Length: 213
Ligand code: AP5
Ligand code: MG
Ligand code: ZN
Image (cartoon, rainbow, N blue to C red; front, side):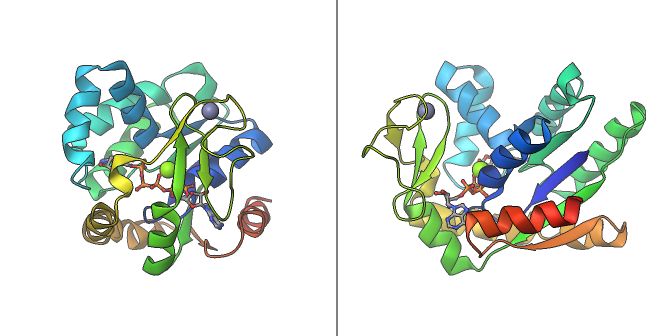
């Protein structure tokens, strides 16, 4: 099963992708997570991506496309994958189609996770992320058992630099200008499936499971 999770920042793409990955046994590929891991290791890629991420802007297509091409060539993607946060531009979507076709693959479903802007801001300003393993929490909707500590690895929880309200607003503008056109792109290909991302985490997962039956 080859899947794309499409949706604005804070829609819950990462949260659902983690659960789906455990449920269906296919890898969760988040380009944002790849950039953050690179930044943690201090690689050139991480430092370059940070310039854009801190402004709430998209990293240039040629950088992102190369990374995804390499990742999708790994053996664990043979039985399927969940792309989270890629593609985000029409150029990325075209490149993805091409790289999959080269290996006789195609996208099966594009899950369009929809949430209003106010919900996005509420979710992101109270999000906490684990510095060691990347696990995601929310102070109100999914709090860690011990304040400031990751349930699964005990790592320190931090606020992502791009989760400040003004950067969240910039990310929303970028989403609307560059990523939203992909809704029509995939609708016209008959791949788009709308998901109400404003419901609880369990309800969202239930509606995704119904679509993927
Ligand atoms: P990326 O890391 O992908 O960020 P994003 O798309 O802005 O999305 P988020 O990770 O913020 O939100 P999410 O939808 O995963 O929500 P989550 O599950 O965490 O990208 C970051 C940056 O990297 C970009 O701005 C760009 O610069 C760059 N980049 C990445 N990919 C790129 C690409 N392809 N091209 C160019 N640049 C790229 O949930 C959010 C919060 O809400 C959490 O606290 C969670 O606990 C909570 N929550 C989740 N679901 C629910 C629910 N149902 N009810 C209540 N709370 C919920
Ligand atoms: Mg995410
Ligand atoms: Zn952790």
